[in-house]
Image (cartoon, rainbow, N blue to C red):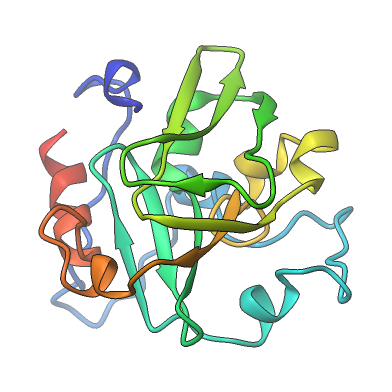
Length: 186
């Protein structure tokens, strides 16, 4: 999805290894600019469809696609889908998000929606098969939330999975470690 935006020299990458000495390292400006904290002006709606998934439940497993999307599997055989921080940074300022319709059936690889930014427009492809049971309608009025908090409040779709094994036993989805390695290679 975002490969065309990503050049080896466009984004400085940091390694994910732990320091070998006991010194404290201050976060780089790159990491501070793209934290997972929610903007101060945004208040999570406790009555929203996804609140319990975002703030009360812990995903059983989180996997990634080569196109810089994430999929978080939950214990009720559902998953939240969104773009990674790396993708959000590569896009630049997001100006529009097209969301799927509730009740839509999606298959692996089908278009789930799209994201437009000042730099480009990119399709979002479903990494799983199932039925769309929730969408993040806040993104329609606040698309910039994807830049501020793409992996929590910036989720895009909630999908009831046909089979959770499509995540747990997938040969195409990347683990956190494999995704980190793929970023180092880019």
